[in-house]
Length: 255
Image 1 (cartoon, rainbow, N blue to C red):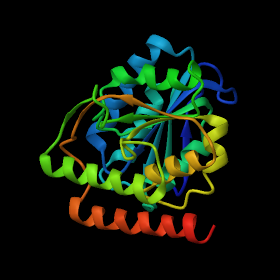
Image 2 (tube, rainbow, N blue to C red; image 1 turned 135 degrees about the horizontal axis):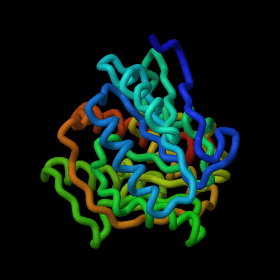
Image 3 (tube, one colour; image 1 turned 45 degrees about the vertical axis):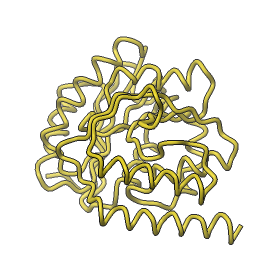
């Protein structure tokens, strides 16, 4: 039985209390079939370029056995940690909590379905460690990117990103790709400003980062729409539009 807000840990190879080069955070809600493959494939890639790392399952009130599967994996892999909440509080809240507990100089988050090809992970991290950017995000809108998704979702995404750029002054082309890296010091400065608790979190953190003068890089990715996506196109599009207007009001009118 997993109690409320339990942090299940195994000692890292570098020592739990020590910093590591990279923290990978997977937000998880009812994704029992994705957990093990995502952890194992990501660790294989990290072992190729990261001297030290941790992987964190930020599990948010799952009811399908995701929590139990994650706990099993922490006993198998010393680099893995599991953060559990009994009640679902939203992806943004799960990420915020996990980021604050992470040990990485670079904090990365990605979706468990690995919709973004992992060969982009090293360039994503190196945008922070080598190129000096504060934030890096995968972009499905760059000419070099290879994207497989329905025409309906493509139109919806392009319309949404146009509105964000127009209404909120962002220079980023793709705000919602679930494949982002952050310089630790930079993102921790912003976390408590970001009010979004679910899907809009991605957009708000990038908009606020730019307003603070942080350097943001978009990198091309290979991306394929996940079969088990939890995005409700009509409902979530309306909610996202409302949140664009809400953030616009706060940034443009109240500031």
